[in-house]
Length: 80
Image (cartoon, rainbow, N blue to C red):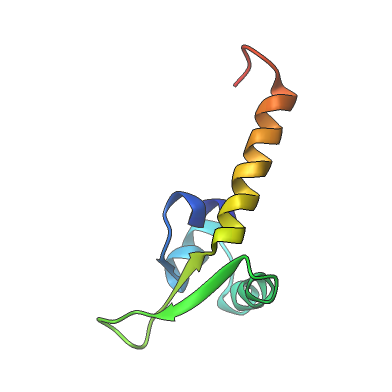
């Protein structure tokens, strides 16, 4: 989920549920955990206050960037 938000920040909960094939209850628990870890934050969608958008925080984006760099380093040159 964090990688998806790093690639397209500001996804609504239903979009995340669809992309991750998660139930609403499971997704809510995961987002709650990421919010507690300061990796994501939620905001009400201005056009439709019934919807909640989830955004990766600076800390979350930095974590994704670091992990992607580590993966590239482990793959070595010429591998993708």
